[in-house]
Image 1 (tube, rainbow, N blue to C red):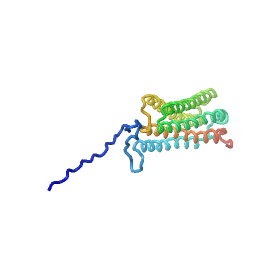
Image 2 (image 1 turned 120 degrees about the vertical axis):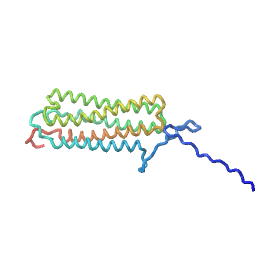
Image 3 (image 1 turned 180 degrees about the vertical axis):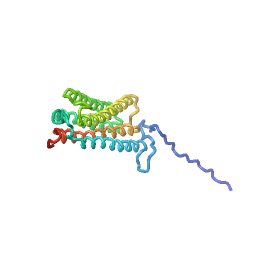
Image 4 (image 1 turned 90 degrees about the vertical axis):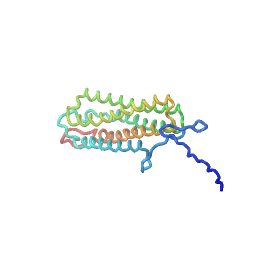
Length: 229
């Protein structure tokens, strides 16, 4: 008895590591390996890194608070801390977080002009923040506060210096994405690249809010030992 020939079924091929294109030329999401949490391995790795960085900054902040107000020699925070100037730089950094959100939104919408504009805006705002920090460090140096001057100088410059280094790394990352965007490599299929950078950038912004609150708003009026805070 003759058997009807079986029809071969082929599973559609899925691209991994590259964005697929449909008939209309739209970008399809890139295939990613996912963990049991539903996050991609790359995003999970970033969250692990940020968790470890929380411990790092937490130890620096705790060290500052433990030795707060115990410097035996000046200058003390009340002598040189300029809250209005730092408030402006903080506002600039917060604005950069908004620009980063817009950059990711433009990537998901495949708005190539928006991607370039908002990535560059985020990097420029971050650079302005670093400019404020350089100005502040130079001002403190002229006022006699250095890394080895007293406990305040040692803990202050270490904490804010490491944060500034993180912001600088983020600026380099943003500029690299900005250059890549001119090659058309940022689109909805590669939005994860922008999203991971955004996670890092929002993290350094949140850390700065904690630093600004504790070092400037809370500890900015500290004087020497024996003086009430």
